[in-house]
Image 1 (cartoon, rainbow, N blue to C red):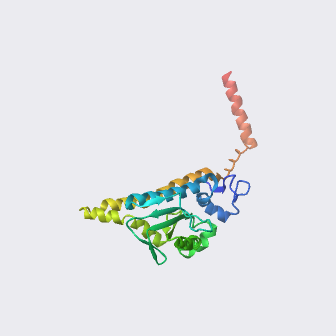
Image 2 (cartoon, helix red, strand yellow):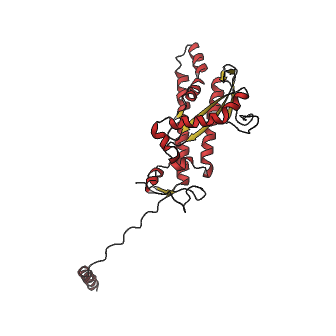
Image 3 (tube, rainbow, N blue to C red):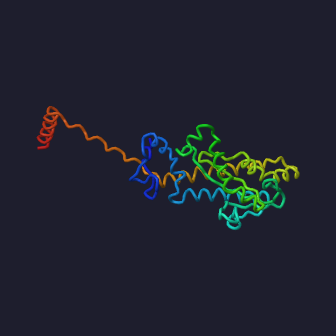
Length: 255
């Protein structure tokens, strides 16, 4: 059986090898790799974040024909220097920035692990509570500034266990396939092909989570040292005399 993990990579500022996880209760949690899925050492966490953002942007562009920007125009304020992750400019749909209709949606993706000590108490109250809490934080950071710029804003929160929220964000991601679904049905199809692409999209997020979080754990985890095997028991004096007699008999037989 796999042993629990004692600490993180030597570059980790929280629990490097010389400062292992503090107690047995936390070891039980860390043994499942929760710390490593969110640790910033090695760039695993930011690469996973960027892959999810890119997957959403590419899917939105393919399904809706929107312009997806991942590098330019990412400011969520003209004064505070805050940035979101992607800007989606639609030609055939309207979203709302406050009470104002707009064709521009800005999104900001974040990941969290509900089983880390910082979120565990909130997650114990309700499964979606940590997602809602993070969404409120993102709205407080970006929403007012984006509305001031005439853009809608949507926080997308993904948990390490595969949760996606809040509900408005899941609905928006699913709605990216609405035009394709309508076009397929108008052409005489059943909508099955579009439904399959939509399922594959959400499944791809899950695959990214599993693969990249596993790589992070494999790279950063420091396993506990295995205890040395016990030495073989010393023979008693009677067993020792019998062993010596056997050796002597073997020697005499060989003569």
